[in-house]
Length: 181
Image (cartoon, rainbow, N blue to C red; front, side, top):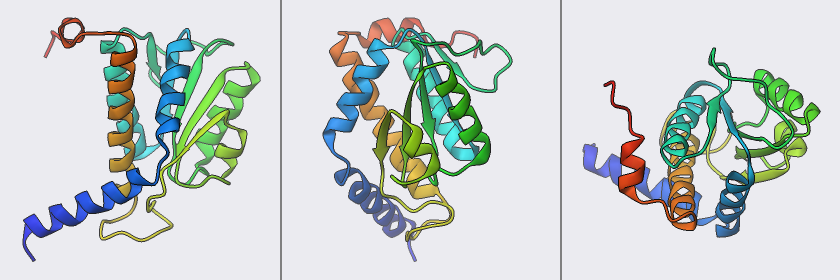
């Protein structure tokens, strides 16, 4: 089997997932990011890595952003936003984080493939990306790759919407790009 055929199949799977997602969810998340005083991001495993890349772009767009679990992450408070990435919506450590955020009256937005999952049920905004996770669904790819890839592309679209809405130039973002590389 050629690699090109595999790449085309992967791209087709991602396209199928994203085409099922309503454009409104992207706009709703942009609105909440703009409204939030600070943004916190969490996810387990590879979903957490997707979250970190999104946090980097939010910082470059001028948002005050933190990744949950890092040593410099402060306490979450009332006017903050927690963005959760969890394919299954059942990861216990992530659920505990969401419950803690809800105790502070923070707004919780969740990217998941399971609308009726415990995390989605207590979130204020749920973005459903109907993609295979590590335990459910079908894909030519292993484990949760399809959900993670779809989450990354969706969140990149959110960044595009955010910078357009706030009129942030690429040059301005570039000035916030890491200089200690």
